[in-house]
Image (cartoon, rainbow, N blue to C red; front, side, top):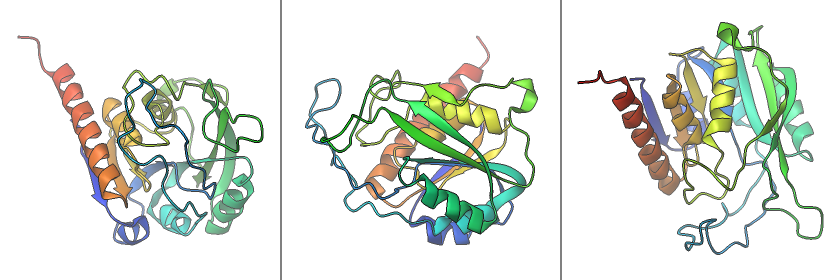
Length: 239
């Protein structure tokens, strides 16, 4: 089975200690300055929420981007979740670091989530795709697809963990498959609950996650370890 690890620490410090040109893709959901907190006191299944409903201060910070560029191989993609009103800040930061702009993807969550209660409920989230060099999307003849992805953020087959912005594994696996090949190494500098890592082990990729919050890092390790064991069991020969 593929290798994976989740490192507890500040991604700026951890990434500086990694080898240049060692990563095949970066897929991440960084803080981007919205500072919204969920008013939900329960999880979607009705059970009490076990951890805090937000991250505390949520400040836009693009300092990690030059490090990501340095770590990526010459022909590689980076996916960055964001929101429409700060997307231009990410765009400017990516271009300043040397990235080329690829495309804006739209994730339709199938219902609205956290947001300013005075306005329309926010049902979609943007994902910026940038790249280094000249990589080819859809390796292995997967086939081209549109830039709209509809995956529910509330009803997850894998179950909900206690993290306020958990992403669907199926969505992350789509990005993994579209931009990398089995055996490739994927980095998530803002690992959160480890969804990117779960998608990686399920699709035969290697994974490095970095998470500054020890509690979330533990959740990520538990989830990825479980997914890796399930994948290993599927590979065992039938007795």
